[in-house]
Length: 151
Image (tube, rainbow, N blue to C red; front, side, top):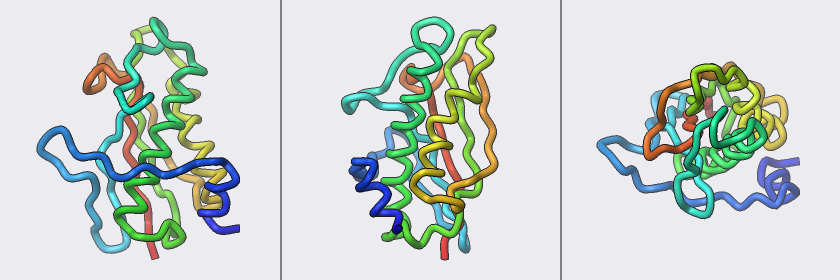
């Protein structure tokens, strides 16, 4: 089953690349690696605002991370033209806007990790880091970037 067949089965339509809101580009290709800039969680086209452990539950954060993964795939598609060229999702870096005593950043980030595994199969298994941070741009609850290897 192709990546696009899996996306269709999951009823996922990839968005276009978002226009950067500061001095950066959405992605950089170096050799066979694609590095994306951080993508913040959005809901209904606006930043998904809130802090885990205060305003949002772990389930909310997991849904937000899944939404970020969809946006990241849209950027990855724009970068490489065809997601079937993705040889591997190499690494995710997840920043979770959370209170000082919140400790489930890894479970929030599973929202993205699990979707990459569903869409890319074994190629979606990746290394990752998940950090709790005091704030994310625009007050968003989650920000994630990725590194992918392409053929």
